[in-house]
Image (cartoon, rainbow, N blue to C red; front, top):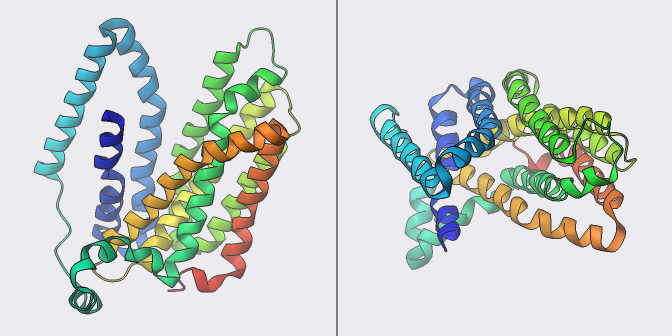
Length: 302
């Protein structure tokens, strides 16, 4: 129940993306959100390390107490120092609310999923997160099956590989954010999808652990490109005054991918084996590039 409540109440991702994307100049959206995402990736890398140290020194209960206190400090800092987005409501949204009656709140919250120019972005984010979550969830089983040097234990190989993914993504996302702003977000999205799909398919060959770590670096770079591109595309697809709804739909698609990806991945492994999982994940990820380049009606053009 506590984990359920944490998931329900942890809507900070959409709020943070909305704040940064709305307060920054439109032509600098990718770069600004890229910097914030880089901080998130660094936190994803450092957090487990600090958590392990805290667990050894403080125990389970005190570790949770310290984590909760840090979150409260973050809430206080956001309240005191973060400027809110000026309240505005576009004419189309006012008309939309008046016409819908009693079910207006629900349609207002979920209506962004029906915006034609946002469909491609949402679908791309769902597929990306589902394939990433599926492969990460079963990655420990994969590492046990590949060759590795005698000095490289299974635990160390998993840790290095996942850390390489996070650090590569953190380093690359501001760069791809700038490219998405200036060279076209759909082109950056297509590049990231092809790179990530190729790296995932190469996992199916079950190379040695060193090669796998290098492939994880490529996947981190791919994730950076896809994240930067989808943020820019989401901002462009958002109607005036409805940026929060657009980013909420975007984050909702990501969370759905995180939830369903491991289940789908486990089903593929159970029926066809681990190599098949990486082949399917790679093909699905690479197909995003075709959608970005060919299905232009599903992506914002402005």
